Image (cartoon, rainbow, N blue to C red; front, side):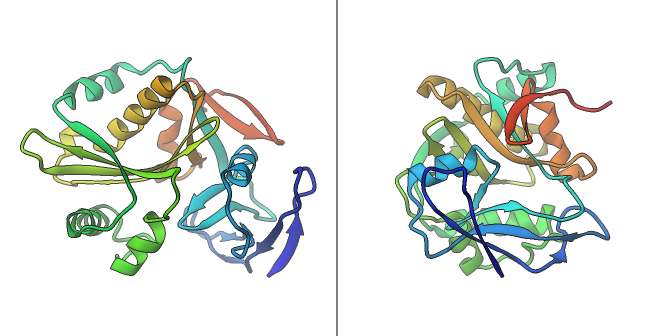
Length: 245
């Protein structure tokens, strides 16, 4: 690994670059990733600053793509006061108004893990997170900080439909990951979880919802262009993003 210092920040941080590895999103590509030093105490101030320059959280790690010959991964965020749901998104919102949401501290339950396991087996058995394990679930989603929360979505019979992991930053919510009942296709629970977080950000007076990386030629990541308007990080500046035809 190679160390780096992010000189534009008001504090000195150390980063490590991975060796090239198989890209998780695009075929026949290699990727490298830049990680914040795992020995660095992750304060909200550091997290806020790095989110603004395209870093994401996975477990206790902050990272961003750092590929030499590819810049397909683009950081995107929703400006919540300007967001206008599409006709289909409004239908999904209305369809799920029978669900109740609870924001809770990160913690493990057998119910959460059963839903997570079912979701990965049904939707992402070809992904690099498969096969699921309890240790993977804990390290990925149960980071214990006051700004790291889980949102439970339950139906009127109190059945767990979805869980969204999200972080509350000073300038927005970061949508970390959502897993949900794969049998409930009609609900479009992944879309609903994003819409719910946009609505929560509005209520909290937070200007953005960070969606992670948009990748044009990756179906699992390109869906983010459906949330409009959208902002994209280009040359360290957030600009309005018009999706390609």
